[in-house]
Image 1 (tube, rainbow, N blue to C red):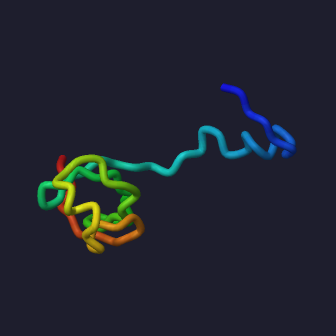
Image 2: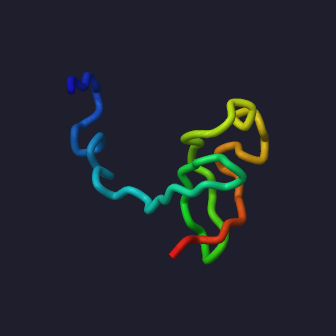
Length: 72
């Protein structure tokens, strides 16, 4: 990978490896990547798979909070 930047490399790579925990869940037939908030709530990061019309559904927009039952 080639990276052209005027920023110091320490600033570019500062947060490398410090990713938020995420999970993949299927809600109403849509596979999505979410950031768990508490036991049964999560924030949508992005949609991974599902019917195309769900990508325009505001309920599945990134940043929305959803209710789900985590699997064991």
